[in-house]
Amino acid sequence: MRTQVGIVGAGPAGLLLSHLLHLRGIDSVVLEARSREYVEQRVRAGVLEQGTVDLLNEAGVGDRMRAEGLPHHGIELRYGGAGHRIAFERLVPGRAITVYGQQEVVKDLIARRLADGGRILFDVPDVALHSLEKDPYLTFQGERLDCDVIAGCDGFHGVSRPSIPEGVLSVFQRDYPFAWLGILARVPPSSEELIYSRGDRGFALHSMRSPEISRFYLQVPPDASLDDWPDERIWAELRARLETVPGFALAEGPIISRDLSAMRSFVAEPMRHGNLYLAGDAAHIVPPTGAKGLNLAVADVRLLTAALAEFYATGSTGLLDTYSASCLKRVWRAQHFSWWMTTLLHTLDDDDPYGRRLQTSHLDYVTSSEAAATTLAENYVGLPFDFGDHP
Ligand code: FAD
Ligand code: DHB
Image (cartoon, rainbow, N blue to C red):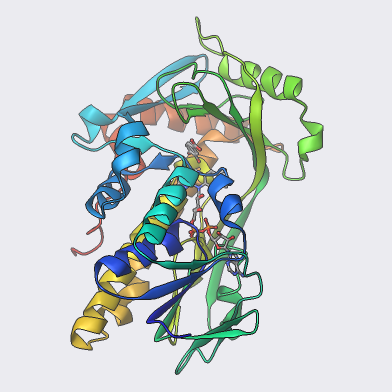
């Protein structure tokens, strides 16, 4: 088998790359370890930045997102017995976020690729990468896929990054001493906007997927197990962490899915080795507090598409050569923002009183200074795609 771009992984990065390349007349094959059902049901992100929404619309895959996604013009920071709204419409006019589940984005992209005759091979768990320096190819299940370049879009635990010889990548990493327990519940959201709540019992986040489905996250110990968290305990803890302002009552309903996520910051540089280009979680991870991971994956594949389009149109490797450096400007900005949101809102077991006072003092600053609130808002809704292009 032969294609122009061999893509490893059918997450948001791999699928969107395959679709954007198709729009530029570039052929690709996507190899995915898991089944179609699995990737379509995997519950993860929910917040799409303005730029992500615009890109999906321009690429013609935004119909269902426009119909079913929920545009939000602010979020609430809740702490110290009060809620404080970060008003996007005032702080960053014209920019907002859309709440639309990652698995819905994935479903829309798979449906569109298949309708356009795209090749996505599911259930291929044994992909291996070869000859990255020259004439690269992929092998799987006794088959060989020759390609001009390989796009490693296979997430943090994938095979692409580990295929790069030792010593080539610089790795930057920080692990956090807590995890997130996430649930989806069949109950209308108790708030119109997302609530990021900081309290002495730990962080809680109230999000949603639709007028009937709510999404919640709880900060839990890093070694927590889902067995430790029966439904009653989850609801009691969500009530304790969210019912902290007068008049707010949390509506409860059946829990329809639950998941645990480690909290990690990670960057591998450069995002290219020979003819292998890494994109999305394969190259970088942020803790989910800033809602940046999926949006970074989209920004990466946007740049990779432009670079490959230039290469196939003119033979120039100019944009391919600057791909990694261009991505990393946004990646590191999002690293800082995600680390900052995480440390602002989570509690540490060994937090000293000084640390706690610093945290609330900083929250007071963000919720009372227009400049500080604008910084949060412009990062949360997403910096423009040309961020970093200007000196
Ligand atoms: P992935 O989605 O991980 O996709 C990689 C794909 O590669 C998978 O389908 C995997 O099965 C496949 N694969 C793995 N190994 C192999 C292999 N060896 N061979 C072939 N295929 C392979 N981001 C946001 O922007 N906003 C949010 O609100 C947000 N909330 C989050 C909440 C939680 C709880 C979590 C866990 C994450 C959240 N994120 C959020 C992050 C976001 O989900 C990820 O950044 C995003 O999934 C990255 O997409 P990706 O395509 O790079 O990687
Ligand atoms: C969601 C996830 C996030 O990480 C976040 O910061 C906000 C919302 C969500 O899944 O809805």
